[in-house]
Length: 57
Picture (cartoon, rainbow, N blue to C red):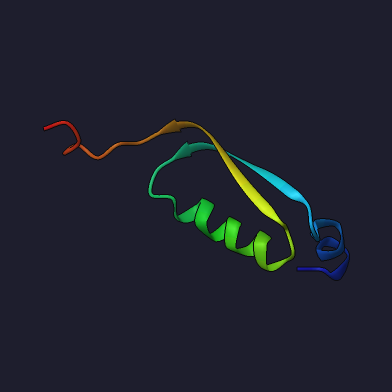
């Protein structure tokens, strides 16, 4: 990540918006990157979530 981007993130709270939350791999990777870059907190907002077929059986 570019040094100027790290400087802008340092100590900030970030909201990451995802259209559909499936396995969580994308949000996990993005969260790790943002925290390593200096963000203080990352909040995930998702519009929909995919559930396993086995849920509720």
